[in-house]
Image (cartoon, rainbow, N blue to C red):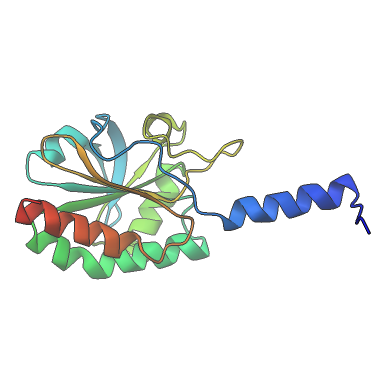
Length: 181
């Protein structure tokens, strides 16, 4: 017996499968990280963030997230905020990027990032696109994390819409980088 589904039901099932499957970061480990400058905020104070300048002090954990103040993005921001002392001990810095406007991120930097690390605004998606971290057909970044070595090469590329393993994987990559692996 064949089950025939109306096209709308088929599309709905297909979209559920797409949302449930993990995303894959397009920039691979070993690739050169695109340099960028973006308007950022930390602790409610806005400033210009330049990746090349940050890399002069050590590795950079760069993570993209869909939208400030959403459930998964808030969980991820809290997780990164709690891990900042460990990243600092390893000489690494963290920055989050979304396609939200800077005014929204200035509030997010205080309440959800707990003034522990900066978040940058990419409202036009320029940086997000250069890192292949934009969701297809949406004006949102995918949840994608990179660890960038001081020489500008990517040592971790991880994408998953679940916020659960991003901090753990980034810490492991920074530890391995520090250990010379």
